[in-house]
Length: 196
Image (tube, rainbow, N blue to C red; front, side):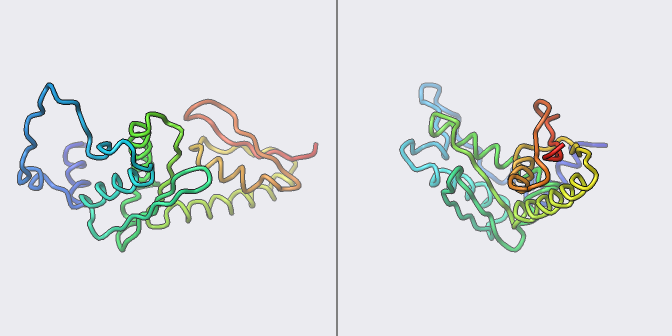
């Protein structure tokens, strides 16, 4: 399989092509004496929400200028919603593009703030909301199954954000409890009977 062709097809689907690259004027050569300044990092005393919003607006302007970004401060993270008619396509297969965008946004904020404590959650076209609803319903079904059988159920490895949804959903459940086991990408959740 030709990776170049697949990448070109993917970029064309996002409205980005080699023709776009050829038409753009190359940036001037950087001055080796000047400090490197990234546009997203050029205002070091800005609020993290402003930095995140500017970064995301820059990304989506290149992909689909009809999309809109809203950033708000939640209790434990900065949350951003990207909305618009074609927003759901931007999430990518199984939310992979969305996950990559979150990692980039987190990195930009960490470099701006000089620390990496700020958590970032991004939803694109309601993808995360739908995913959370699906996971919560799955957790409830599995809790009934575990409570009835008395046998623990071990999930497949999943990202921390998905395990968190399952933990929160079943936190107050009277018959089951949850626990995460394993390391790194192999970390998974086990639903166990609470008594027994």
